[in-house]
Each structure stands twice: as C-alpha cells, then as structure tokens.
Length: 85
Image (cartoon, rainbow, N blue to C red):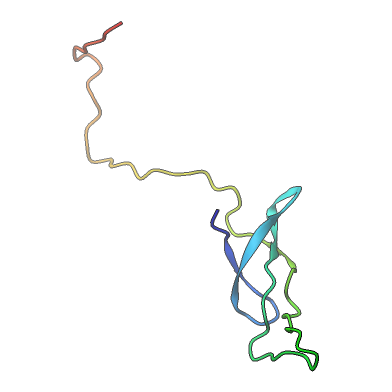
C-alpha cells in the first residue's frame, strides 16, 4: 500500500502518513529525523518534534477513475448482436 505524503508542520519535509483508525480523512505522520539533527550524547537518534502528529490526509478514499475516450461514437443499440446461452 502506498501511503500519501504530507508536509511535516515542524520541518517542512514531505513524509508518509498512515491512516488513523476511525477517521478516513486523518492520518499520523511517520516517525522521521529532524533535518540536521544528530544523535543524543547517549547515541539515541533525535526524532523531529512533528513525528507522529495527526494531520489531514489528502484525497481520502478516492475512488479509482478511468480515463474514457469520448471521441469514439457509442454503439448503435439497434445493431444485431450475437449471444450464446
């Protein structure tokens, strides 16, 4: 499943957001490191303060759409057709 990308409100980077249970239009930003952040003195990575924030997911639950070529004429409904039963 490809997760939509949203901009982190803290660092401005495009980060994947996973859906939140119970809300189709909300998501949680995946954990990410702050730009330019280094490890703490004990060696732990420093996550961006915007990690795991709840955000609006763009285009939630969009239905699959097909591009239909409108230039072709529709079939004549009076034309004979072959059916096998």
